[in-house]
Image (cartoon, rainbow, N blue to C red; front, side, top):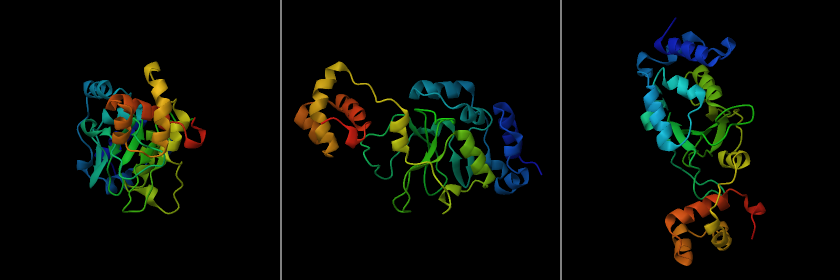
Amino acid sequence: MSSPLGRLVDCWMAWGGVEPSLRPDPRALALAFGAESVRPAASHAELAAWEHRHGFRLPPGLRAWLLLSDGLRRDAPLIHPISAIGPMILFGPMEDLRIQPESWFELGNPNVETVCIDLGYRWPGGGSPIFVSGDEAAGTKPRIIARSFEEWFLAMLSHGGREYWLDPDFDDFGAPWDAHRRYTPQPDLPASLRAIAVDVAPLVLAGVCEREIAAKTGLDSDDLEAIIRHIQHVPPNLASP
């Protein structure tokens, strides 16, 4: 039994050189996804415009899929159209995080948690990691659920589009903020801000709000954000006093 999604998945696997043994069951895809699940393809120009606007390259697997279908739905968007892929929104606090990395983007919103991608680094031996935002109401925490788009996409399809990462026996790959700090360099800080950063660091680590820090130091919002991004990248137990 073939389906529009099944045919596109076969094309996607061929483009990316994915092992044929990893192919999701076409019959299961036809049962789980209707014809309305796929969309007209995005254009190369649309993807290039997105990358220029946000300053990050899309991973090859995601790019290849969007050039076949601009998104994917099953009751809700598993993958947003390129026009709706944007900076993620935090739905709960993350330990030691004051300002989220600019490389975090919401990829889809299937139901309980938003699915996000970190375009700031490549997981060792993998690609751009996929993580979920967590949901305070559901009692879930932010966690990495796949080491690349390809890994997540194939697993999600094999599970019929459901949120398999909510299964009680699912093993995640840790906290997205911890991994981001581990695998990306600390954001640079202009020399003009390094001296004042020494005074700002204790306030940031003590949890003082940005407005109060700005009032104490006279920093504008852009300079204060740059300092906070620099300081928060180092775990508190390693931060200089």
